[in-house]
Image (cartoon, rainbow, N blue to C red; front, side, top):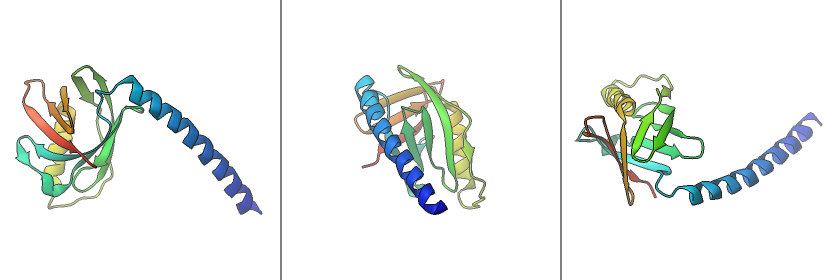
Length: 142
């Protein structure tokens, strides 16, 4: 009987969340088309091709968060954006150690902390540091 009650409560909560999320995401889309949104695959990090590591940026303009896969761990951080100016908070990540990708992950988190300028053209998102050097380039995942 307990389980049936929990199941009914869960179904009610999930159905309410879905209708709220749908309305909110429609408002977000209409509000700002130039904000990055969705999943991006990182192709370049500090000018070096890192496609094989499958690093991701999952950007939610609604919650102002970036999350994804950093080479070994999953991560999440907040961000702020105004026009072309962009900055990310310190990423929180799971704590696995992967010897082969430790350096890539370290560079990726360093790059996230240096983000200052964003440039979104079609399906390509490029981030630059304060010296306007390109540090992360990512392509929208389909």
